[in-house]
Structures are given as structure tokens and as C-alpha cells.
Length: 101
Image 1 (cartoon, rainbow, N blue to C red):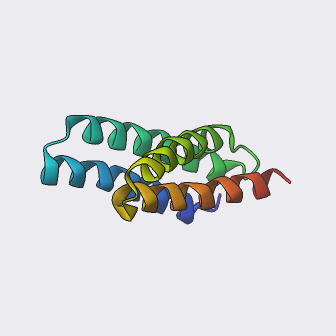
Image 2 (image 1 turned 60 degrees about the horizontal axis):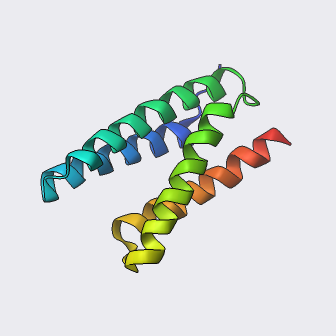
Image 3 (image 1 turned 120 degrees about the horizontal axis):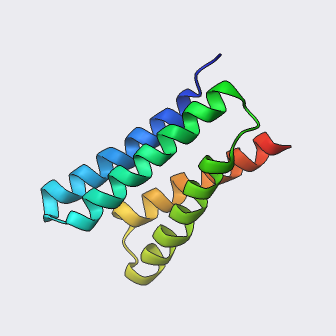
């Protein structure tokens, strides 16, 4: 079993982003969704570590984050944090799609 370090790093980034959103702005939804998305992505990273073709959970999490954060970036025009998360999520989405091939 080789660890999917990229996916674990992405999961940690999302979770830490939720914590930072809570600390800086007092946003409970940021905390809840950041931690939930980070945990789900961590589970997806664990699955892809065991079987590189098992990307269903990772694909779902990155797809939802790409759409949600992409819409937030489009509406606000602010790159931080929505644009950054949308960009990272899109890259992870493409990576998951590549792993399916």
C-alpha cells in the first residue's frame, strides 16, 4: 500500500481552511463544512491509497467543492479563499478523472 500523499495533503488543506475561517471570521459553517469535507476527503485518500482506481468518494468531494467554491468565487470575485479552493478542487477533480483511465 502506497500512501496517496497528494490527496491527504488536499484533505488537510481543506480541513485547516475551515478552521482558519472559523478563527478569523467566527464562521461556524466554514468550520463545519471544512472539517466535514476534510474528513470525507481523508477517507477518499485512504481508499485511493489501498486501490488507486477507487476514487468515488474523492471524486464526489472534489466535484462538490469545485462547483460550490467556484460559484462563490464567481459571485464574490475574491480569490481567497473561494478561488483557491475552487482551483485546488478542480485540479484534484482532474487528477481523479485521470486515475479512472
